[in-house]
Image (cartoon, rainbow, N blue to C red; front, side, top):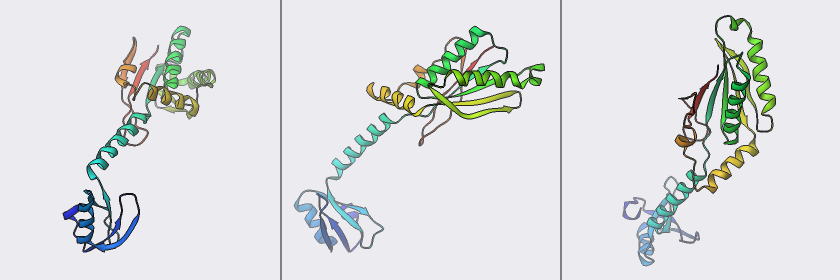
Length: 214
């Protein structure tokens, strides 16, 4: 920027984006001083490099505002985990399903894990049947992103919210003026234990809630 530019000549762009042409560096610096603007190198690898007349302080400020707004409107991809037993009590099942519904409505994915113990491992169909039941009861909110799969003593299925459901969650978050506070919304309730998470977009970390049902 300004005197830090080392090229002998530059392709100059005016403050409104108009093409001035190729001019000596000294001439470009003089033009910048005449209009009280900075000479900023915007394409240093070009030959000759491209420089633009701009208010660099204002440019940095506006760029920071745009980045902040983008972060505010960005929706984290979060994976919650719900654990169930193959012979779960009907009341507990409804409670667990309620958590899954809440997570999907919030735009989060849900990893549903069926935990087998002892002789239950010889009856994987019990877990499969339970997962399929859950799938059929949340079809208006989400879909199966990863089909049921046996993983050692566990059987795992991943549910994801429908695009429209996630869009509604994003809109609700934006209307509140920023990303929801995951630490507050995902605070463990009775019988819930915090676990680890997974990121979805670009450079963000999600939280995972681990809920175990008997």
